[in-house]
Amino acid sequence: MSRRKLLRFEENKFRENIVEPGKPFFDAAKGRWHEAFFRNPNLITLELACGRGEYTTGLAAVYPDRNFIGVDIKGDRLWRGSTAALEAGLANAAFLRTPIDFLERHFAEGEVGEIWIVHPDPRPRKSDDKRRLTHPRYLEMYKKLLRPGGLVHLKTDSPLLFEYTMEVLQQTPVTDLQYTTDLYHSDLLPLHHGIRTHYERIFTGKGFTVNYLQFRFA
Ligand SMILES: C[S@@+](CC[C@H](N)C(=O)[O-])C[C@H]1O[C@@H](n2cnc3c(N)ncnc32)[C@H](O)[C@@H]1O
Image (cartoon, rainbow, N blue to C red; front, side, top):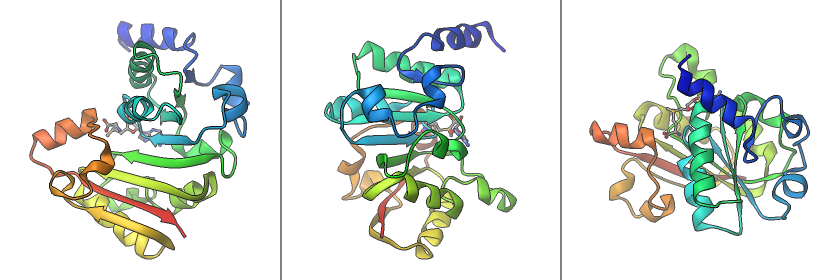
């Protein structure tokens, strides 16, 4: 591991906006984010597979009266999001280092108001479909965590993941589904708040369009 990564991991240990294994709140967070972490009752939005957390910090700046938590397993990427939040003075942005599979260890039913899934790994191999973040097993978990009517957003540069997700949604009771296979030439463009992530820049630079959808569980 590079020295830079090790230094970032060391800094993360002392960052108040990073919740990670080894910190007391990591195992005590479930059901307590409003009261014990943000100290307000404001809606919590999760950014899953957040990488550098561009949605967490970007939306936190747009909506100061809401709370945002970026979730990823990579500590050096979370360090970047954490640094951006600290530099911008965003007390309503936080980062949780955990596999998404374990979200129910950290959030109670109905504790989350909204979910963004932003350019997740597409997992193109059929044998990997259970690892796609829009597989039914993940959707079941998101439904439990979300308060009724909570929005789920997906942005992806992968046509395969987008088509797969649309197929899954045909088998899932959802409402208010809106989608586009070319966000930048769509009426839905304002819904992404003009935020572009690291991976979005890479893939749009290679000529990929951005697929976007949003829905609520019925
Ligand atoms: C393709 S990158 C996208 C990062 C960022 N959203 C962006 O658009 O630039 C996928 C991210 O998902 C994270 N990731 C993949 N599987 C995960 C899992 N099961 N739990 C948590 N994070 C995961 C990776 O660490 C990586 O940062």
